Image (cartoon, rainbow over all chains, first blue to last red; front, side, top):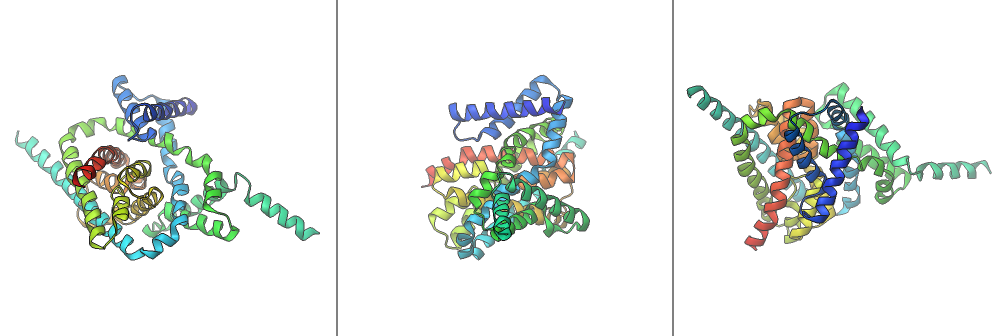
Amino acid sequence: MLLRGLTWLVLFQLLGTALNVLVLPILPGPIIGLLLLFVALMMRGEAGESLQLAARSLLRYLPLLLVPPAVGVMAYTEAILNDFWAIVGVLVVSLVVSLVFTGWLMQALIRRQQRKAERA
Amino acid sequence: MIAVQWQAAWEAVIHHPLFGVAITLAAFQLAFAAYEKTRWVFLQPVLVSMVVVVSILLACGLSYDEYRDSAQMLTVLLGPATVALAVPLYLNLRRIRELFGPIMLTLLLAGTGATALGMTLAWAFGADQMILMTLAPKSVTSPIAMLVAEQIGGVVALAAVFVMITGIIGAIIGPELLRRFGVQHPAARGMALGLTAHAVGTAQALQEGDECGAFAALAMSLMGVMTAVLLPLAVLLLS
């Protein structure tokens, strides 16, 4: 059952890759595949058991799959060390500010929507 | 004579096409067990695994290129895993519909804000044009960031590195930071983690719960699409 779900995921990824080459060079194949699968699920109205199983199993190991790209930092140690503080400063400060701002804004908007719904 | 054979066996093992997979799997399980046991934020599994793998590679005298080729078996699954994010997204469709307005507004304001802030800071620190364009797409998932960086004149490989550093820092300090600032709503926490720390943030958000993970996946993909479409346009218009 897991295999059937996995097959769908791979097929959508390949479909995304094809569209990436044909019409949408700006978006990577997997992202196009994600959007297509999302639309397909909405049209179908349900997510099959095997697809859910495959997605859950893959996503559980998402951090593991991200390790090889992260090791790529190794190839640029020198360039990073040269501008270490500038890079870390920019990355940390902008991350902290935008992370808090995003969470705060989203929460404020959700609460505003809830208050409106209560009054209506 | 025996010493020579030891040497040959060692060489055969470290240059075997599965060596990269083996050390990545081992390092990840070690890192994950350490994180589960201590729950200490700095033991973020991706970061610890990365440090362990890099140390092993350096100790064995292997290059990143060789490792990348031998870890292909894992990397190739990143594509289907990204596609799989559509499933939690779909399962939380009702919640997402309910919050459609807040999602779009947050995406527009916070998304552009995050990109603009990063570039302004880098400019203030005196980074040159090339680094500026490399830093611009740091909040989005690496395949998009690399494409965008190339289009607007940044360094592709370095863009992936900035993306990774941003994601790891976000996953480490994000949850605690959000708690300190009183952001408890799972949808808001997910949006914040996915929008600023892409896949690594989404992986972290999935651990907090289904809803949080779904909103992180949503924020990550929307931010990716928005950056891919709007950033090259903005750079074109501003320059």
